[in-house]
Length: 244
Image (cartoon, rainbow, N blue to C red; front, side, top):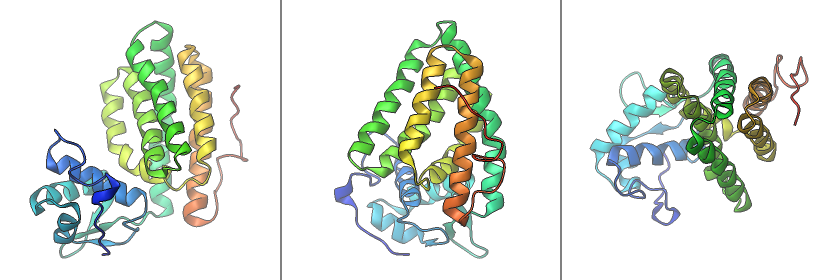
């Protein structure tokens, strides 16, 4: 595994005071997986990761264990872990779960917005659009991808449904990796803005339709980035349209 000192890039395990070291280490390793510094299939050595992040091996061990549970890492047969290499089936399975979750989340979020509930969560959702735009203006792909993932998490939070939230927590790491593969981040920003507009307006069905379009476009883009083709069932094949 190639290791790099990253004290200057601000995303090391010491970057956020007040969080447990294992959480900071987990976020730092996740960022390196998402932005490609830890390539798919790369073996991660606990000692080397700890040296790179400037922490002891105990929080790194906990962080790697958490990332195995998230599906970003996988255990090697004898010892250690490696970055999971996504197969087509992995992507298909992820989208089979995420599509109905995301669509229903947008529908429920719009319902709560129409009822005037959770205005703070709605403002937070809008702020994530600004965060993504600011990151794009800085050409900061890592933080833009994080903002896109956080947008979907915030839609789920807006539903007020804890079961949806727990399910989304299980998907977020893999989704962030998938979002990082998209070659059209501007298209993602536009679709998120449309989703937000419909949710804010309390239009349940249009919010759901715009989300379905977004998720299916995302699936096609992910398959194209990983395997060179998009497969069926997405954009250009039974594509769902939503008004802007």
